[in-house]
Length: 322
Image (cartoon, rainbow, N blue to C red; front, top):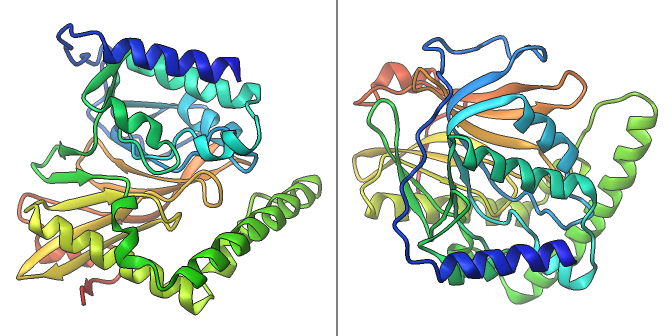
């Protein structure tokens, strides 16, 4: 717990530091060609990377997988979209192994060596919301942020916990869902241990079951619709969030506009993330721990007008918001 206390103390000191912050400039020269091979012996180069719901401090966090990814990745922008450190879990039980500290250390190392890092606190790390607009060792803490893509898209990022009131079916279902989710994660953890002993890759039982529960699907759909409506009001081209541990990359029609919805998932169940490639393509990736690389789940190629041709290349079907 001393490591966490020290971190909080350092953030507080950063809050009181009124010096002007100058965003870091990428010092590593990136190739103009996208590294599409994702070979474990070669680093991956991205323009931007979005991670959320890492839940450092939770026993279910896949910190080793995330550290492998970070050690093999170079990016100009790294966006941490909430629930990176699980304060809720740490209050219940002190759990901070070396792998969790290594992830935190790696992120700070990236921030100090040229990667522009933004941290948007979520609900499990809401303690950091008191320090928005502060800068800590190269990391900017913000309530939300609009990223300008290579091809000119305005991409709003937020954690998503602000939409809970629009998603919750009822208090009874919410409490029941929390307990059932804890049970699913417990089963998930033990199943992963057995599968790894037998040489099988990681597979999320929790995600598999959640997608087959009707109430869970209703909540996911309601959350997506609320986020997209908010993005439309903000007049952005894309919204990137986390919170519900349900990775997705899709295109939606609303008020004669097309909005890209991206949920980068989590590193508890799914081990997924969203990236923008050096060619301006957005991808939803999943970490493959056996081959130490990422696999593309969904992708969307964009231009400045998001043409109909690019819509056809979206692996998720276009949807209309209710």
